[in-house]
Length: 160
Image (tube, rainbow, N blue to C red; front, side):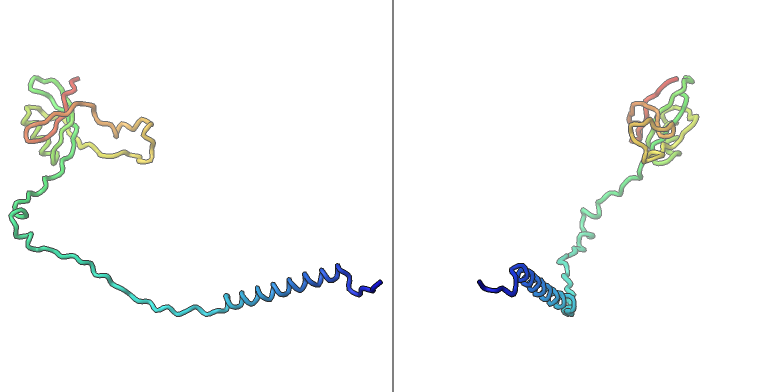
């Protein structure tokens, strides 16, 4: 029988230690190459792509441009309370450029203006859910809208 100086367990242990050391050496070599490498100097080239836009200034001399009509002023909505010729109180909505223009339109409809107030657009609290009833300042009188003389819009009379 032969005498064995190194047992199989010892040989296996030595093999695994050798593999581990080789693996760690490879890992250290890769890490040193990656971590200690200097970054490459990239040449930054600024490129300007000029857009190909041609502006035709001759359009300003054309008849189409000269015949353009300016926009009208934006109309505001006003709630009003007024009395008719026969003394009956009425209220509604009217659209006009200014409060004075709204008064003039109402007077041309033979109404005596008691009060007129601009309707505020939007909500007091924009974060409140729509399912909740809004405050009294958000509401406007419910009325049907009709066209008045001069293109203004008026609300139908809700008589008291």
